[in-house]
Image 1 (cartoon, helix red, strand yellow):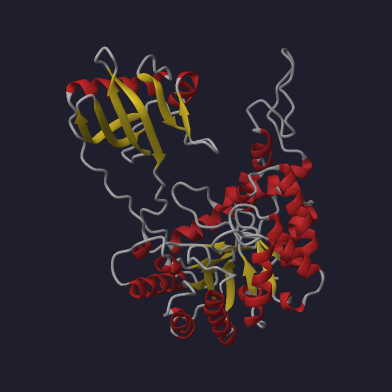
Image 2: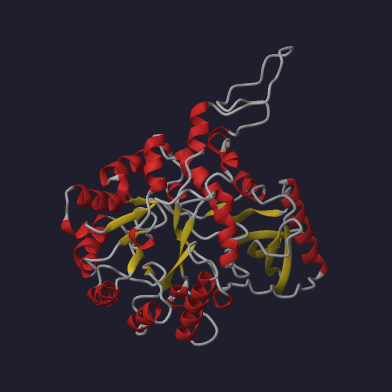
Length: 470
């Protein structure tokens, strides 16, 4: 193996990270979480326990799941509509709502039978009256401001819609609709309130290869695979300006050009939605013209149903083409609908055999975002049973602890399945880094702190290098 050229740069930054994440590592506490010395006793600077220091020195050689984002794929939040000037009586209600967001006390702002959408709850989404409404009004971030952009008044009823801002940020946090009516005394009160979160646009400007290499240097990671997000443009869930295939080509071209700036550090993968008519054509172009080493597919983004024979046929064709060209595959195998034992088995039975000779990497360990223990069990059982179809099957650990909610019992189950699979097949990955997401240095520290593996087991994973990176 080549020397760990970058590994020593930032290990000292991570010494406290496992304890920080697990215990808070507050000032005056020791690395083991002990309280400060009693009054009158000398208080010394805390130092990590030996096992924490040793664990902090374990750094992955390769990040096997990273993204950069080109200009064509940038997602810019649309500007909000201009504010509307409300009639004075409605404006008084809205200003009272803003004060309630600050104080948490709505007073008599709501009608006695007023109802509010519980955006945090499960089951029945609407709550009505009294303490239930009061609790939800107080759940808004302090300093939230309801800014109207439209209203309608019809006699004793009115509706006001707009956005909720918070703090100094100009980006709207929520959309809202307030239904108002006059009570018996002619005072306007809120009869219904609906507020829904606005999804964040993580990538409002490009993420470049230079930025990714800087993140790798900070973490002490030598190399990374760069998975193009060209598959975004083939997602039926999103709409983009311009020609779809031209956008896909532009994004894959941009990734290839960015990676070429860092030979030896970054390896490019093509991004394609496997059900589009151009999918096989683009995979061939990525291999022959761009020199890419693999293909990334995201079944959920591309709306792939692995129980649909037509979808399976399309995916198999991409797998066969990649196998023919010697391209590795990274697959987010969770697609449409339920994802569990049946879907994972269908992937093993119907799709994986189409690429028997190249590495196939299941993203996020079980193939999706939220923890799917039944799907993971299918893959682990097949590998441990020596199923020949899994001969070149690998698994990356990208963002598995958020997917499992960080629950200790879930992390214990994940560790058990990793041992069943065999740690030599397990690859580290951290996923895309944006302005709002933690960088690889913190993602690795978080994983290291929450995954109940021994230091020796973590070293095996950290030193693993996928065949396509060798």
